[in-house]
Length: 179
Image (cartoon, rainbow, N blue to C red):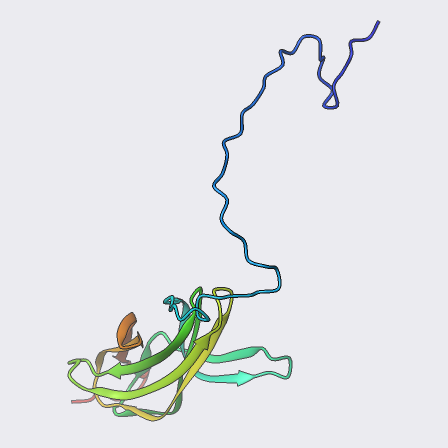
């Protein structure tokens, strides 16, 4: 009276049977489950990805272990020069690599002939799932002229990111004009 249905609810008498052939995969020798070998343990270094880099006025460590970035900087507007920062920070995060690395950060003047600040931080990524969060603290940085400065982030002396940092002349409303 009712058609015979397969587990998916299909009428099994009217559906042709198809036999699928699954290709055989090459099997690689497997390691015992107790051994955990990462590329860095084999001496192999894998360059990480720079996941984020943010220039700000301060980085605070919270009780929860989280970090709070204070005063994110995209440009520096100022009516007068020089302008100085008691503290300037570069927050960065690396992931997807393994090995020992040195992150170096330089801030170049608009002519790009002189670094006005620099710092470096060594760090290690133990495996491809690890990440490293680095914070460069620059003390007493002064910007002497208007123009576009550049913040460079290097990994093992290879440039990985270059961030423009404009120092802009701003007018103060109601202030007398400067000659």
